[in-house]
Image 1 (cartoon, rainbow, N blue to C red):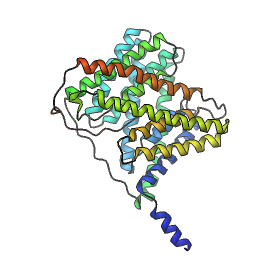
Image 2 (cartoon, rainbow, N blue to C red; image 1 turned 45 degrees about the vertical axis):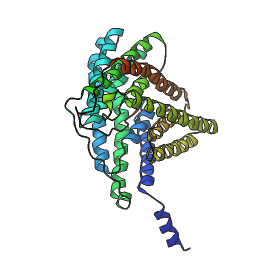
Image 3 (cartoon, rainbow, N blue to C red; image 1 turned 30 degrees about the vertical axis):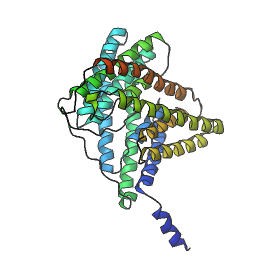
Length: 367
């Protein structure tokens, strides 16, 4: 076989899904580089933004990225104004998270620009919980670092997507995702969102009762798993969310196992950690793009890899923050499941979902 035939055979083995995985790896690595360059305090969050914003065409990626930035800025500004008034009060913080979390998730389930609404609530919850965990740190620093990390990951993703669309995507185009329809009022979705708001409020009690780290990641976990299609919510969200919780647990566990192996082999050497990150992102995206019902496992696999293998400083090589964030994800699950069970017993059923059109949701999160 000559070189040209070998090259053509190689190209024939490449699919749009392979290109998508390559785009995600490039976006995550660029996001890490940019986040380190700007001195980000949570580089893994920038890396996850670089992963989650990616879509098959630059127009979709750019819109998604802009919505993520807008939601982050709006939620951060609300936290900057409201957190000083409620952070010192257990009741005030719980009510604030209940109201903002419910509103945010309801609009994320029903609004056309749902991605912005999701990150509006996520950012508010993360900033408020970070402030409660470390009250001595200036609130404006919390807000600024969340915005900078989001912008670093999102802009990196946009850049990679634009370059890819103008080059390799000409040969391997991706299918475009239609925008979701909007539901003006959906009582089942509101009841579902209220359960998320209650779980977020309970995180305030957990933060007050126990000295647990990185509870902001618990808030991310709660809102992420509650983002399910509105079709079927009239019968309650216990089953779809419990399935999502199980897949989140399996994905996190598998990703953590791979990350632990990489940490053992790396012994603090940054090139091995970076290589492990790239491999983990490619594996996670391949699972996420697969023709099966457990695609969410791939998203969570990637989350675990990023929180454990992307330290805030490769020079220090401290993996403790990554382990703490992973623990916080599990705490979020433990808080949410009892709320779901109680809601399943107490809340009314709405029959068929005639109050709004079916919506196909996708994962943010961590996100």
